[in-house]
Amino acid sequence: MKEEEKYAKETGDRAKQAVRQIRSLTSKKKNEVLKSVSELLLSSKKEIISANEKDLAAGREKGLSESLMDRLLLDDKRIESLARSVNEIISLPDPIGEITRGLTLPNGMELITKRVALGVLLVIYESRPNVTIDVGSLSFKSGNVCILRGGSEAIHTNLVLAGIFREALRKSGITEDALLFIENTERSFIVPLLKLADKIDLVVPRGGEALIRFVTENSLIPVVKHDKGVCNLFIDESADFKTAVAITVNSKVQRPGVCNAVENLIIHRNFPEKKKFFQALIESGIRLLVDKHIKTFLPDLDLATEEDYASEFLDLRLSAISVDHMEQAIEFIEQYSSGHTEAIVSEDKSNIDLFLHSLDSAALLVNCSTRFHDGGEFGLGAEVGISTQKMHVRGPMGLVHLTTTTTHLYGDGNIRE
View 1 (cartoon, helix red, strand yellow):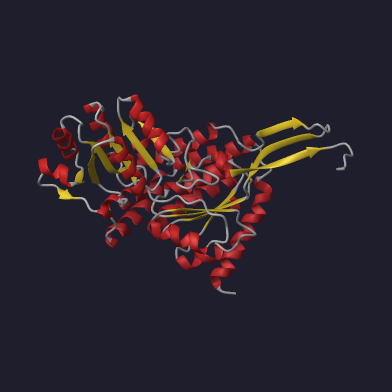
View 2: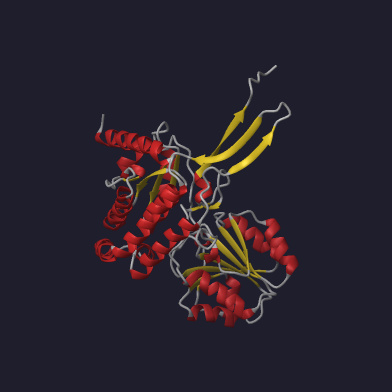
């Protein structure tokens, strides 16, 4: 047996063994562990930041993009935010045991369907070390064991964060294997894990197209894809000027290197003061790529290509196109969207309704920034990721999405005729 296969089997066995203890924990005990995680994050700031500085230095040496460097960064503010996120998860109701269906059948038998944990979750992710704590917390609260495999660019930070979570488990007398971290970052160590259909119940890849394609092509385990975010924002002719500027700037500039940042701007040709609108975007630091119509009144801007409209830039580039009517905007979104987030800025109710009824993405937003499509903002505490597929879960993946159901049937000697 190859080293990678042996390592995968041992990891899977440890995870499966841990499930037996985790599934019987009370909500109080699980929250006790998470409270310890939150406290340890705050008391370990120096250690986390020191490890993170090693990853940032290595990233600069490798020439990582500005957006990737931003994803890597964990400073005081972000660590505090991470601790708050854990506390928000503590405050959420435990989905385990929730009765989703209960009735007495015509034959007198009692049927109860309730939520139970999935079992073992494998999450493969890149760049963002906060995922280690977010996913660990959501997985543990929902009664699951998680196997985490982060990218090489965040290895030092992830090791410290995983260590903090495991310390919290140990302090509470719970097996540390409720959270397992794959320390070897070579891709060859992923493939054997993806074959463990008898030990791992669900795989979630978070990262670039290449990673997601690799996982889906090699996995024998069900996969929930958290694909790229080619998000679109439509500025209707009726949109309020100040609102349109504020939402567009926030959707792109507030944090450009994340999946819910806008990548395509669609604007109605009858929107007033278009030149002033685009100049406001440029002044905010946005680098516009435009169509021929927009270029007529802003000749210094570069033309957008078909490839640009289909791209997730994850930086301050923003592709823009002008349309004559709503149907054109809808057709453009249907052609180029990745099914993540679409937003409209409009004061026209009929156009808003048409937008909402015509499009089919994980989230459709009205008069607000695309940056709101997020597990924390949706009241989930955090997220495993944002799913762009339709089966099992769509949009932010939270506690309830890490569960399945079981049915208990109570009889009194009943037999089927």
